[in-house]
Length: 172
Image 1: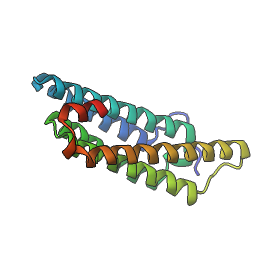
Image 2: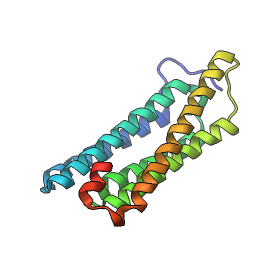
Image 3: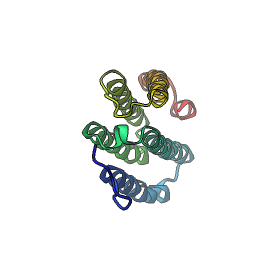
Image 4: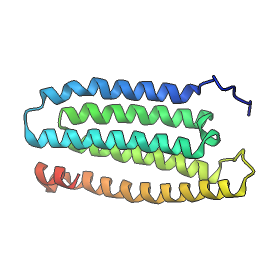
């Protein structure tokens, strides 16, 4: 890995921050169009999930540092996740709650794939055993949490026909 100068910036970090900011910015106008309280609550929770997802993504990049941030794999998964986040916000503004839940499940599946690839195939550039142990532990917890949440969202999406929209949004 090439040594970075103090004034060099990471391309993927700037790209993702800019695109995520645009996704949120263009999603703001949807708040003004929503009249139904249930729809508004759903859109608000969807936006909170998207922001939380992004903060988690940034925290993961910060925790793993150059181990993942400069990789083409990370860039590819980040672009796929941004596309899914955009669809989640677009569809939640039209109150397509079942489709949004499927997209959230897809987002979790993509992130789970990312974690599994890094856990099973990833080669660490660091030789610090404590850092490698911390990264492996973080990936393990990442995989467990994503697996549980994937199953929960998938069950919720598949049970949409038997619950009312209000109960669905409450479970969401």
